[in-house]
Image (cartoon, rainbow, N blue to C red; front, top):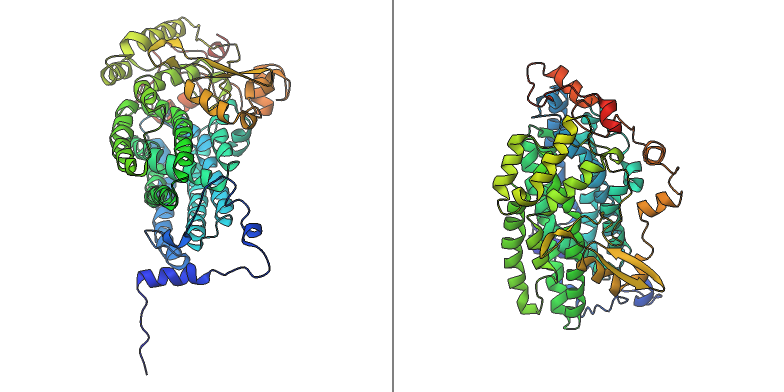
Length: 518
């Protein structure tokens, strides 16, 4: 009996992708794939695109099954051993609240997005790759929710993340990013998510934050982070392959891709403002500063990337120098926003301790003491007098990134950056030239933005006052889930768990009701 030849990896990949494809007989190619040409991208040969990992469905399930067994075993061990009591400090959990409500729903949007765009490609290899990544993103949602479900039993603010993602003001920042990508064409979606976010920027989200989780005793988050990171490494490789494939297919693709890179670098950079704040202010045990992370994972790695892409006619993103300058500022500016508006969040904020202020001074020697430390020390002095500062106004939001206009000008960070543009008789406002440029290229898309502040003022969010909106529309419990950390329910509960550890206790007991209304 003849022995059947075992297929090698390349042959197996061909059998499970191209050999499963078909040629249309009674429908035109254009009718089956109507979006493949609508963005102006020209594909001359889909067969030249190949997954460098040659991943197919049969190998995918075997690979992920082993990861899942280990992942959920650690989750169970963490829960059974009351891992939440071994964290560095309860303040750390507020970073998880921001992650769960801000980042985890994006994984689900990515799942939906890749499932949709994969359907639009006539190339079998690209369709299969999009399918694999869609399943990856769905797994990430599930594992992240499972990891954080334990914390929901012991901490506030984690109870309704999906509802909050759709409604809470600051969560419109990540939500608008993905909805912008999902309402674009399939090739722009790949450029936005697979390349600009996954390849260029994802390390700034996963690597420092997951290291921070480890430094703060959060083994549940570390575990799902490392599990996801192996997938992210594959996604990054695919993202680079996608861009190179598109650039190699036709020279007319180059200016289109460049415009998308300019746009999505800036959109991703603005989204990562939240991550910078988490790293510098929300981790009790800090790993590295946002400035250091930006230097390592973007300036060095990104510089090498765009040097490589020069041969295709691609230059670095348009506003990259502004981003490099702002690495020493954005985390402090973001924390200032959330400190004064924490009456409308699902997490607590606080003033850094003296040790933390000194750490920030060390990490930002040219900027922190000069601009930001005096502000924080002033707010802390008010708090010690029982006059904890909350901003009673509603801020002006950027029409594109939807972050309050609180960033500085690139050449003068003490001056608020503000741009505006008119379209059809209406004036629109922006936090930066980068966001203004995005609007001016396709204004008809962004005039439709659902801006939370505008909606509140128009009475579309369940009430005219902030407390009613927060309580009834956001489903956040005022005074329980938000406001100042010191003296909060969570702070007092942590002190009960650790009666001999008073490092985070206020020097003078603080009445939470006083902090709410101060």
